[in-house]
Image (tube, rainbow, N blue to C red):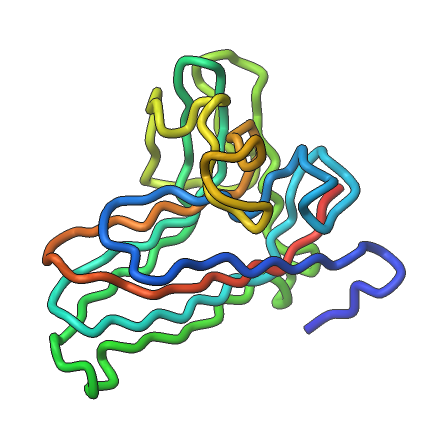
Length: 193
């Protein structure tokens, strides 16, 4: 992995939840919040690495999506999804298919600065990511509006922190089928400019 020493302050957060049973949204990195998140700059996130660990002990399938909020206001918000893990449990708690670990690097191999997650907000209503293309997005959804607090490293969803805004890195844990629960944790290594 290339050395970033002296160029950027590398930041790391770990977000997760035990026994997630239904579709739930989470804030991974709140770009504008320099008090509760370990970064100083608020223009854009550069993603260096994602890691996921999960444990599931009953039948069910989950998708865990990671994305960037491209626009948000008091009515709704939009997200472009940049990574997804599809997880299906076997129903046997001692079977290794019920546990999942993966680390995904977004730096090196010519991407020394990771993925630049800058939002192109030039045209209201059609905001996108400048440097990352995706087939999956969620548009005009009330789950991502600016007055909805999401669970984050700063605290519970009902708090004043973790409210979506353009440029934030978010997570959506989707229960695709089944009635079980999933324990999960996502680690994010990044820097901001």
